[in-house]
Amino acid sequence: MDDEKRAQLKHKFEQARQKERIDANIARATEERGIVVFITGNGKGKTTSAFGMMMRSLGYGHKVGLVQFVKGKQQSGEELFIRENHPEIPFYQMGTGFTWDTQDRAGDIAAAEKTWAFAETLLKDETLRLVVLDELTYMIGFKYLDEQKIIDAIKNRPVEQSVVITGRGGGTALRELADTVSEIESVKHAYESGVKARAGVDY
Image 1: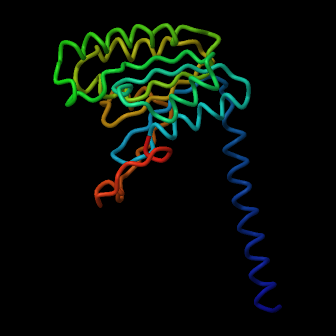
Image 2: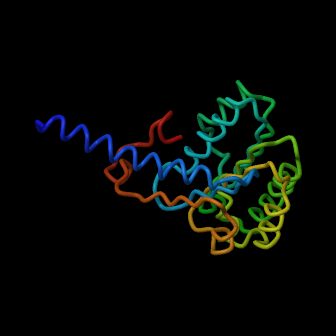
């Protein structure tokens, strides 16, 4: 047997073993319900990933909802796309920008509470298959919103509804609640080299 045939047989054997493991894992996953996905970490791409899941859900004809905490002062490509192409999506932005811009704790708390009130309506809406709570973690970290109230609302959402939460930090309770946690690591960022943020890539 020559080396090429030997390599092909080895490859076939290894792939067959891998298929067995994957098939067994699929067979074990029998529970049908919505899940909580938490995307955190210091790297770029948390919101981008959440919007990717929104597009995926829309592709199946599912209804989705979006709430953005922190963001909203500077327009983003995501906002432009949703408002122009999907006006049916329930969409609310806190609209204050970053806390270092406002420097107004009382005003930020009031805005956060108003934004959370909208988020709560989405978390009770049985027609929504996916709800994105973008940058929610900062509201917990800054103590703008009551953490337990957030946890309870997410726990008590409709059984078929999935929730995607993004942002750095977030605390232990949020990690424990989530079914899937992904942490995005920052290896390097163009901004650190003096490259200006680019429309369509960074915002």
